Length: 238
Image (cartoon, rainbow, N blue to C red; front, side, top):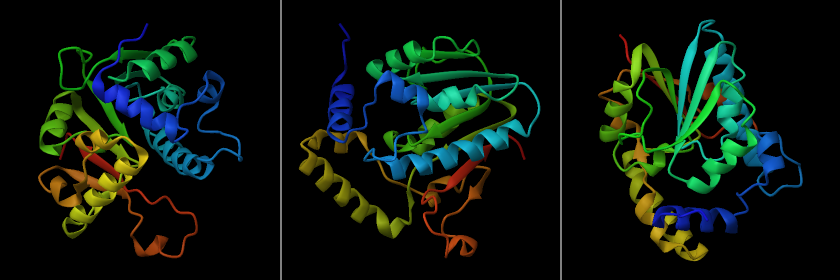
């Protein structure tokens, strides 16, 4: 029997209603998914982000120790593990999907999963070349808590990568919160609003960062089906 925490119960209940819980076979194939799936379009975005990240890290052509925070069912970890000379670890407090990740990807030798929050003693005691937050930074209330901790886990030339998460202008935050609150209420999981946070670019001003992909850039203005999320890298070096 899997013992869940309150957040996990709410989170999994919502994901089930949204049809975001997947079979082992589906997880093994992600980000590829049948065109008839209700989240097919979303997975095209996730696939694009994944491919760009894998290409970027592969270009470093050296051994890489990679950590994904809030790895869920582990699909992205499995893709990152295909990078030559990589070692990948995924952490999450969602036991149900974490156990699925362990089961589905048990045969990948350079991939491990751990039950842990990044800010607890259960975090792997080692340094990483890359720490990835993919569609997950919104579950942390303060970037000024989570980012300094993540930077402590980086090697001297390491990087944090934030993908597939909205970042708002300060003037947009209140409306975004109200939309999320209304959505969680409508979905039947009002408590989720306590676990979901809205961040803005201004919160990154004290960090050595670069926007590797900006959906608002003029060059993407006329692009159809563009990725709506920025790709942000935070560096542990000048």
